[in-house]
Length: 306
Image (cartoon, rainbow, N blue to C red; front, side):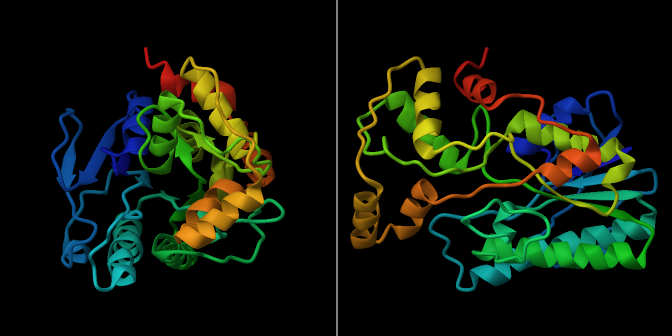
């Protein structure tokens, strides 16, 4: 049996569809509409460590649930709130899983633990520079999980994705998709950076591979479409997929950065103009895995949802 947290989320819903032929146990706060067995579990609750979870028949637990970046966060201590869910909640769940005899624990982390930009592609051997509460709390969870794996018989698998896109994707990709559909003239036609992204289908395929592949045991994997693009290329592909002719103006990057500096949007401009590449050679070699869906086809599916 496979246990799954975050089953109602963007990645979790697609993963659950891919696991339709498996016995699954869903762990979360809300009763799902499906007929899968369900156990109520609040990752951020103070009682989560004392909540009994029926994991004795579970062989693999896939942990997707997390506190993610929150716009206009009103918490007086955001990092503590992230740690309660992403670090302490994750480790409480992993300890219960290990005690129940779960063989493998798969944790969806973030490429943010490596950093937010680079001059050469991130690899699993790099020194880590987490930026932001989400990345800090996820890295602390990774470290704790590796300690649990060393002390028990439970295997731990860590997956670090960059931005995940797909139909109805949330967050920054949703904003880009909205711009693509409107096709307004944008000053983003001369950005020659390189960034890695991962399509929802490719990420879910890797997770399923990690459930079944014995070589995944106690490994950390970076993931992407294995096809890096500039923001200009990304938007051009999205606008064409939406059935429109791109209207991207070739404004020099230094002017965009200057505007970002004077408007207090340096981080936003960084996400548009900086490099963030991911080297997935270790993932491909260890698992014998390649992304099954091309970048172009993945983007096309976002705008053609039939």
